[in-house]
Length: 341
Image (cartoon, rainbow, N blue to C red; front, side, top):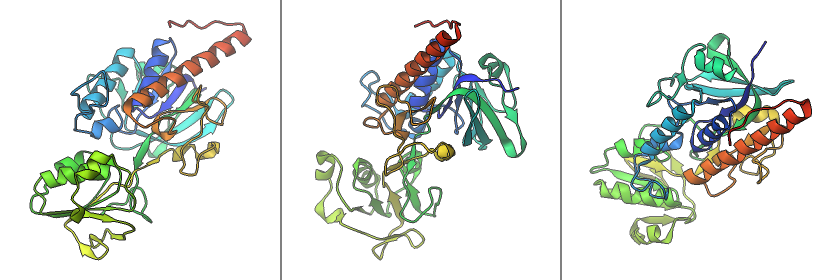
């Protein structure tokens, strides 16, 4: 007979981690599922200083990710690392989430309770022992489901999210930093902050030629002003990733910054309300989605301006809503649940 955690949280970034930590400190039993080798989410791939967090000046995104792992460990939250949610189904008591091994499992920094293979004491303490099947599939059970699976970098038009080509880098992150640009010709695609910031970064790393292609300009004015008119190509353009060409001009590298798109394909069976871009609709006061006992937080729901701080706030909103729901249920059943805050 399956054992249920109070909430399965899919995604160990700032939103999911915040929700898990709050639930644990409220006396509940969350279970966190993380695709990567450690919790932290997108900050784990950001080697630059994230000076937008008022409480953490001078801290890099990767340090933010490490702090998230430490917070999860300190709260005693069990984490299933290297597991991607691939399906979810409604049950009589909540939800069954099917996860699949990604090959990215590992021990999180500072021992963040990452369980990679089989069950452990942390599973038993959470009441959520997985059903292990073939092909690395497991089924996990929770009374509530929190979707905190975030976003992925949007690829070139007509390409699948995972399509990649030699000399084409999609989205910001460590791969951009690790690339050697000295003497190369580079096309930067995208008119948002990421496009303009990375134009400046590539230029400062010795690239021979850098052209920025933008259908529309959405970046901050100070970033736009720093790009010479001769390097800016405004309007529609056509990129060929196989030939590494833009509008017929060949480059050594193409850097694609076409923004972000939500990634919650595993929840398709729930038929949640979404907007035209695929972001999950939620109740603003509770983060509850259109299905019973399902919550969506962080960038997958696009509830507020996307950043670490708003994502963490979303996690608190969902955690308190889940606490209230469990208290109401306990009251109807004549029982009590201990809460510490």
